[in-house]
Image 1 (cartoon, rainbow, N blue to C red):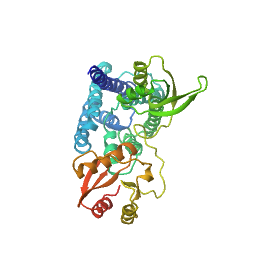
Image 2 (cartoon, rainbow, N blue to C red):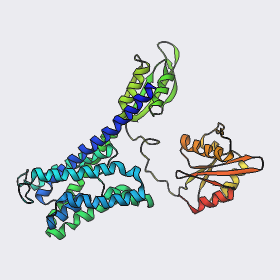
Image 3 (spheres, one colour):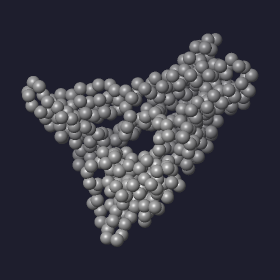
Image 4 (cartoon, rainbow, N blue to C red):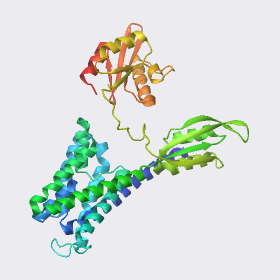
Length: 406
């Protein structure tokens, strides 16, 4: 009971920390815009850039147009992407709006008169501003937040089109920065805007890469099983390897765990709780892909979507392949390395079929469909893109897959 309470408190602490860090990130981001960009008539990308252009053209405070535009985007995002996506985005938008208003109150010496902290060195402002903005954005993104705006547009388009988020955001930023020409009729300011966009992108990429660095634990302990259980209880996976201690001439087990660097202390505390004298090493790793980490962007030419038929019955596999061969690559259980019987612990064939496909998705990562029978009754269950469906026959299952190809 105490352990559960501790874990709930730990989860609450990290959730609160995320929101605090989002506020710090937006403080830096809005500070970079307010201190280094607005006084010099410079334009950045995103909604901040749009709000800046409106400010230059009409004198309307940045926080007013920034908050209004993002409010409209959030309503659209909630409808299309759901509340789960939007909670921390709302925090980012609200805190950014508040910080913009505070920066204006602190810095403005009169009506829309901003101090020029870099004197007449506009290029210095052009470098310092986006560096601070990039650091602020990286803090927001690392803590699952967002400043809204073009991020929301990118997420919505990415949901329906196979276009990367970076490409969408880049296109939006180029259009926004270019439009400042129609306010100042000054090509030089447009060029400064492009320079800032590049500096901010490089800073964001560098900061994010450092923050997103993963670590690899190698743990040597005679109490390896309890340590593995403790790490799993914290929500992280472990792998047990066979080893041999040459000094003691005895067989040993080695635990391997890879996690984001931000969770390093959680793993270390789990180890120390079980075995304060455990021997372990922690090393930095890069380019980690798979469950819980990034997705490898490498694309294979003419690669068909893979769907698993949860059986090794060659007659059924052949039939499914004949029906889906034009659109899908159908794999059997053996093809994905599953050589153990799938769980069937429920009272109905429908629930057992659902259990099978969820098991495959959880432990192997593939979408799949499964057949369960009970006397003359049979049912097919399909897990596709996170949703489950039930069908009376293989033909109905494959027909649905062909109509809703990934």
